[in-house]
Amino acid sequence: MENIQSIDYIKQAFELKTSGLYKQAIEMLYKALETETDNIEILSQIGELYFLLNNYSRANQYFEKVLQKDENHENTLKLTRTIKEREGDLDTVLAVSQKLFVNTPNSENLKDLIKILIKLKLFCEVDKYKDSEYFTQEVKLECANAYYQNGEIEQAKELISTCDADNENVLLLCGKIKFDENDFEAAQEIFSKIGKNSQNPEILNYLGLFELENMNFIEAIKNFSKAANLDKSNAKYYYNLGNAYFYNGWIDEAQKAYSKALYISPDNLDYRYSLAYLYYDKKDYVKAKKEVDAILDINLEHSQARVLRALLLADNKDFIGAQNILEDNLKKGFSDDFTKISLSKIYTELNMFSKAEELVNSVITNNPENLNYLSDLAKIHIKEKNYDKALELAQKILKLNSNYILGYILGAKTALLKGDLNLAKEFSQEAISLDINCSQGYYYLALVRDKENDSDEAIECLKRAILYDLNNALYYKTMSDFYKKKEDYKTALEYISEAQNLDDSNEYKYLYSELVKLNRKVKK
Image (cartoon, one colour):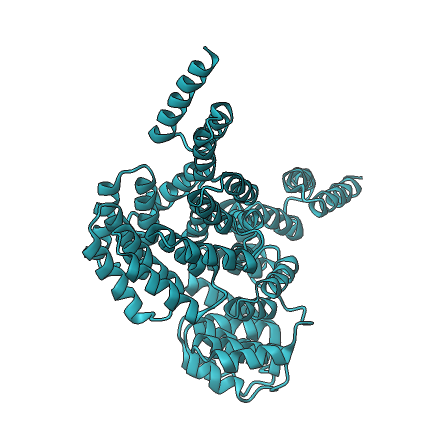
């Protein structure tokens, strides 16, 4: 009778385990253990359930009881090995792996043994097994992968050269090695040979990286999405997907992908930094600061997070605070382009133009055709009112890439400041012809029309600018100015009110209060 009841408890425990209800399953097995105190399988199952609950201390207690009764209990040995590997006890992992292979010599156990031997860099020991009947093609490939993962690239290459060259996993490893060696052309050829129809998420991830490098963002998104769907536990795939979304301008989707990557790997500072930068880019400074603070709480010397902190200070008009952080970055040896360009922007705000130009030129020296850096230099010249140089740079940018919209915007802004309305109009219209939704193109065209005293056309152009960038406070402020010129103070007040809602700066507060006064006078 007791045995029947025990079997019933075990059955219930198995059903609960299958449903993921591990604690309830343990309770059932405890009841079964009351009648069968020495049952090894019950003890082993309890240990495994504690293992599934990540309670390794309790799991080990039950595994030790099992091994005292049967030192060769295979499932218990394998789970013990997994725990010890996670705890970093590699010597025990080796001992258990050796025991498993001696007890049951097969390819699977040899594969596990070789992986730990390579991890411990016991290469002579690995050589002893290469003539074994169990050293199959599959084991050989696993061995090559283990060499690769532990940085022993030459040994990995030597071993893989003897594998089946058409095997997808062999090609994958060859492609990864070529990629790491920066031989991107050879790597892309290998991954393309495997093809987009592969169901291997790692291959799809590499195909996505190549598309990303070639700025084929939609294709990159497709590959990363497939990889993430095939392996939902891999944070890297979601992170790469987030990058592809971000570069394609799909900010909300990028935010979701970065958040998924962080959910899977919450301690990864690179993932958190990318999310912080996304928030900064979309002007959500509160969330950006929260992520930056989280990074710097873990690593105070995270250079890129320090740059973002400086930029956040600059957005609050604390240019001196931003300057101190960025100059400190350079003193600490963080002389990356991001730090230099960011510091140049701070110097520009502080009217330290020679220092700003020196930094940007140092970056351009290594990137002579980088359109963003050339644009940054043009903006410095605009700020210091050296419009000829700025215009020269805008024209240089457009020679390098006639489809670069920001080049036309820089040209429009500079020409307008120079008073060359026809040239400003030409640049603005070129920007709009490239992108019918180009808000800045309409903005500068509106300013040109206003200078030409065509107020109605200026207002129509600015309405377009606002339509395509609803959250730009400057556009609402400019529209308010247009209506103020027409003495339509009521409409001017409505637009400056919207500008103040978007940007609670003292300038907009002052303009708002002035228009409130004007509206009162009109009513009187």
